Length: 138
Length: 138
DNA sequence: TTGCATCCGGTACCCAGGTCCGGGTTCATC
DNA sequence: GATGAACCCGGACCTGGGTACCGGATGCAA
Image 1 (cartoon, rainbow over the protein chains, first blue to last red):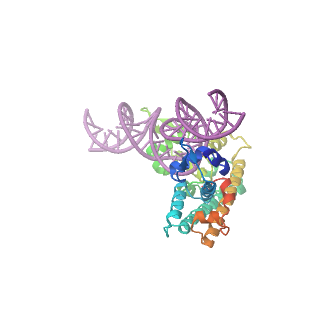
Image 2 (image 1 turned 60 degrees about the vertical axis):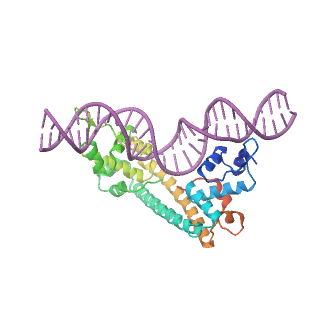
Image 3 (image 1 turned 180 degrees about the vertical axis):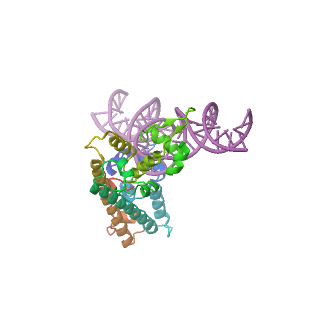
């Protein structure tokens, strides 16, 4: 198959394929005599694996490493170890968002409708000082 | 106070203050005769409000609008309404991350250690096809 | 063989939310 | 009055994950 067909089959933009190749996430495919990329049918699976791993929270660089590890069978930086780390990240993120949700709910319950007032009055449940310091929401 | 003092007091980079001003999130302050920004002590609170709102999941543009609404007291696009929308977003995000977490846990439980194998065997619990299609993890 | 879809490589651009740079003032202190 | 820190502005740069555009080459079918 050609690049456009692969893209269509995996549901991604054709440019994305070239981009993944540049990033080292997809291996360079064979070429036609004229220089066009030629893919085996398995390429669709590989591309889907990349997309799935992304959905599990891995960055493209991490996906690249995970696939490379798979190829050279190095043990202790394998999927298990990485997935454990990623799980911790994801759980931390969930905890963070849960705090945010609780604060939003509290603000709604109290009927807060003006951030200025909230910040300068005592009764608002939003913990402005704590919130100002750490991390981000997205 | 001057820009550097405000930045230090609120725990942000001095450049961030100029950036927020450019973005319309902070109002333009008075200037010294020589053109330096001069802030009242309340500016620290205002800056902390911005940071807190960001932590609650609002983008800078949303924060800008929220503060503007506060100033002109327009009713139904106030904090209440926006917070309700934001709450839905945050809960959707949590649900999404929870699915991701469940998949990671399942992959760990099954002892998966190679994405290639997982994708081509039947026993792996990672739903590659479903995962390939939607949204992102961060 | 002609016509048109597709592909090529390289580069620029997009989003958010900042941060850094550099050359030129201004402010506060000695 | 001189010195050095702080500040000014505009624009470039950063991360991450792509997307868009370009002029030119290739692939394939009628």
